[in-house]
Image 1: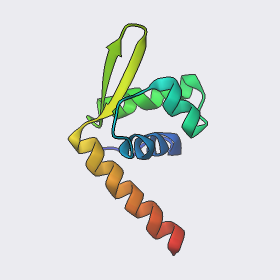
Image 2: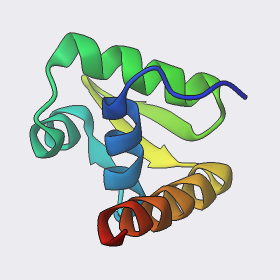
Image 3: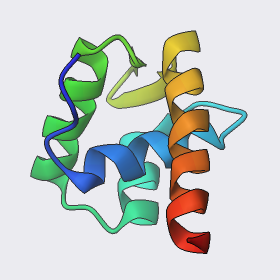
Image 4: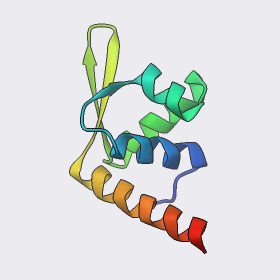
Length: 86
């Protein structure tokens, strides 16, 4: 597995990891202060890595983490806390 190309991919993964329900793309991008074109690229990258499942419902795309994605998100949250607390 390669490392994520951007911090936004990591941030998106962490945001989705804390969610109990599916979220649409605009909700997640708003929470991460991420522009649409960058978000699409990041979501596609996460899906290619098997960390994210994208479900299309009408005009909306809903995003859910896979089991692997939830596990990676949990580890990223722990790493973020260690880095923050020194």
